[in-house]
Amino acid sequence: MEEYLIAVRKEIDLVDDEIMKLLNRRMELSMRSRKLKGTISDPGREEEVLMNVMKASRRLMSAEFSRKLYREIIEESKHIQEEPFKVIGFQGEHGAYSEVAALKHDPAMIPIPCLEFAEVFDDIEKKELDFGIVPVENSLEGAITPVIDLLLETDLKIVGEISLPVRHCLLTLPETNAYDIKIVASHPQALAQCRNFIAKHRFQVHPTYDTAGAARELSERRFPSAGVIASELCAELYNLEIIKEDVADHESNTTRFIILARDASPEPGNKCSVSFSTKHEAGTLFHILKIFSDAGINLTRIESRPVRDDSLQYAFLLDFEGNDQDEHVKVSMEQLCSMTVTFKFLGCYIGGSK
Image (cartoon, rainbow, N blue to C red; front, side):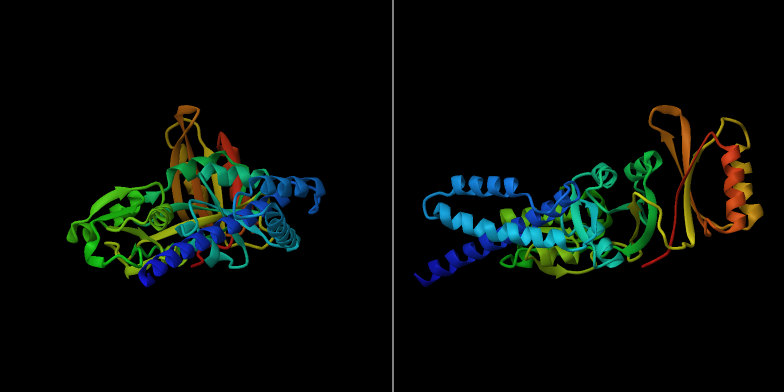
């Protein structure tokens, strides 16, 4: 009997944990809805919600209990909407490295998960999000090309950046013995970065769309002989045990993230980003790069991508040190603009933060 009671209580704990995750998700959606409506209070909508939960009450829960419970939830949602929180969107599930970077960039911001990179961009433009954070390059894997393509098309501004050391951990359920692990799940890139560790332990691999998504799935589905490779934050969020830290093959695994917003940063920066395309003429790119060399401006990165609606045309994304208010930077930008087919200033921001 005692053993059965312990098992039931463990199940209750799991249900409580899931309820709290769902409530947190509801509050996040409530914050996003605040960006889209004129006022915080909406009596008609509140009554609609209360009627819906009363109709959904079944068996043990009375309709009146449901109404009282959700009245408290609505009041808390309204209280949160009154607070001057800034929300920042990231791609993936809670616990993704993008969220780790967002919290490191500004712990006061509220990270909001988005399904795709494009959703981060779109929701900033629609004013559902104040900011977005996206990865642009990894020290081992190179450029994040879907993000580069979106950057070349967007009117959003880069207002900050952060470089985050990626520390992959092997996580399991608390009840799983480390020696029983047969399968590890994670994003294909994370699995590739831990190839030697996986081979050494002869794990089978299960690719997933997201490192944090793998952690969430393990927490929910309770696979007894599985582990995941994910962040330390995932262990905290999904009640998983850290079996081993730093399981990547290389210690110098760093991802650079940029912070996006609708408007340029009001703070003076020390780094700028631009995008441009050139004519198909010999020496054009050389002459453009010579502008920066002659001005003594240090280029930190250059990336080329084919234009999506014209496979014969290439666009370039360029980062360089300097402030857009400096005279030599202004002159260089004017020269660059006159020599290119298309030109876009993506933003000036504080660079190099870790």
